[in-house]
Image (cartoon, rainbow, N blue to C red; front, side, top):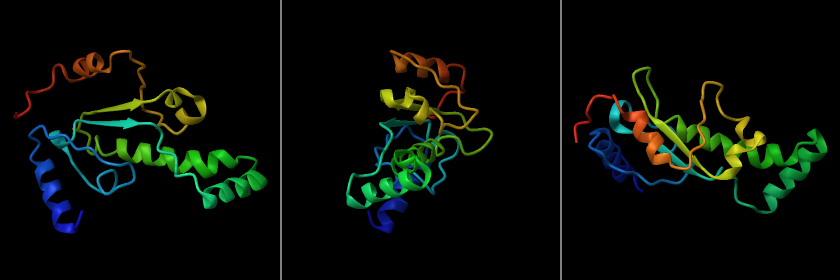
Length: 145
């Protein structure tokens, strides 16, 4: 998107009228923007956003493996999970904000991946995320839409 289109999109989202935004992790809408209050109620992340496999990434993995004995962690997990946590950070920007982060994928349950979650996260594994989310928002003031 060009700058004008991005600005128009952000202005639309800030109206907090129940819009849905589908974006790619690491893109302009996943980091570096503020959508406080009801402008963004949830982030749904599908998979841990590991970097694209290419020669450069494999060489980084080899270097980190030789240097720290943690090649996969530093070459793949750190950048991938950093994107996940940044995207989640778009939901709650102020103490008054309330939102949900839905992580879809079994890898998020693995210790090596979950180690990147902030300590105040209270993960809930759910067969029916919709029911958990409905309970999360019950009792909140009515939204304007």
